[in-house]
Amino acid sequence: QVRLVESGGGLVQAGGSLRLSCVTWGSIFSIYATGWYRQPPGKERELVATITPGGTNTNYADSVKGRFTISKDNAKNTVYLQMNSLKPEDTAVYYCNLASRSMIRSWGQGTQVTVSS
Image (cartoon, rainbow, N blue to C red; front, side, top):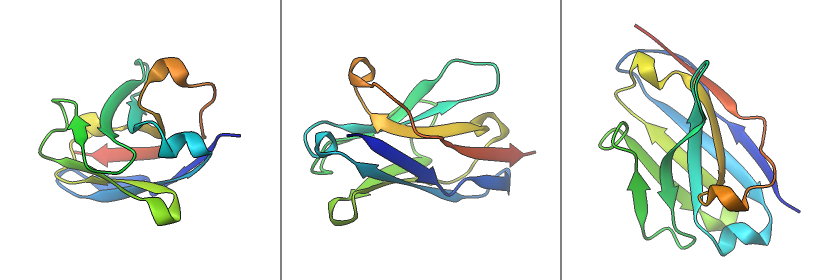
């Protein structure tokens, strides 16, 4: 059974930082890559960062490259997203899940990130 609980969002000024956490339940996350997604108000959900099960390879959307860092602690079943130099356009609800969208069957509640200018 897959379960995800995201946390760490909040209100921050432009240029600030936040660290998101996602606790995962389900052995599938030890087999397949995990990703952080975000859904800005009125827009589609987009994938912004991915990490392989062992944590050795990461990928980022161009919009966050150089500012966001994805990492994971397998002992804690937790995936992190360190977000630096935040911009108002980073405002969104952030979710974690499998990096392959076709494999996703359910979503967590997400965590709201709001960046003020």
